Image (cartoon, rainbow, N blue to C red; front, top):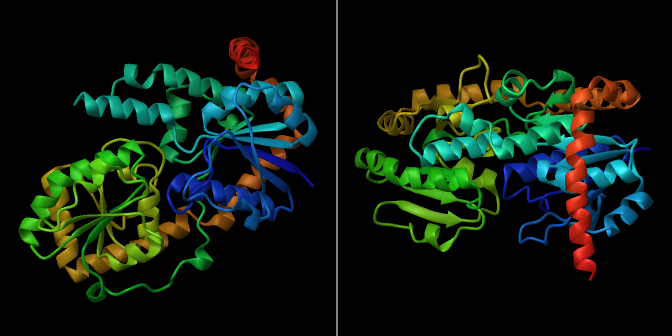
Length: 407
């Protein structure tokens, strides 16, 4: 029986974020192998965190820059350690190497932070993305973490290609793992066109791309409302700040709904999902939820990035504001167009997001790497070199902080 330690950036909130859903898919997959799984994090408990004990997963609070982690991991002795985002690998990776050098190290990137940050900078400056944006200090940290780990999980096919072409990462260090959907639990039939009404979007308000999309919808919505004066836009998401709730305006039909207890239910009630995402990375949970509930969506090229290859999109992809609004109106009004868009959802889910297929591929990669871990690491000389040099600075900074805090 393998022992898995997952070091989380935050407590999983599957009802608040796609990252939380993805994390729970991974934890459950490891449990399905008969492995012992523990989730450890320095984060504070949160409002919508899942009760891991109900999943048969133990949990532990750990401290940053503290030697108590050395004692903890020495006692636990995991076979596999998975870091939730590169910041956790920076903090705890060297301690894992010190105390459990044989443990397989996995980095779950969730999405590439450096890509999201680069696009954010470009959008704020109202210009196109440059190589200088991409090759930032965040990129140097994130790529170094990828190289120090044995395998990194990459959620987007676009990011897989970017890492290999722009950052020259060897494919043996990467594994493409999109969101895993249990197709057996997906509804075969959802509410009909006539039984649905209004538009919706959903997303954690603390996530910068989601908040930007809400602000962008303020410009798009009047174009839609002009043609559909009875329609409403329902905006859902956890942790809405006062600046978000202040946007609530029943007169214009723009309604800030806040936390949704059941994202699938509100998705099914809506006729069209809007996701005018201007920057970000990874793949978008709201658009996957729309597919699951057979709700056509209108999004941007960034929104759909990495989610389709040659398959038709279950809705419309457009980056022009006026064309985006018109596409939303056309889908809302035209049942035949809506039904055609809806029909693409099930085939896309089967082609790219089947949890059974994806889970088998990931377990095969993981077990093969475990069997050949010594040769796998010998092949990654750049990673060994970076670990030798850069982790020394991280290690000594952490030790200095620990010593300072002990006074």
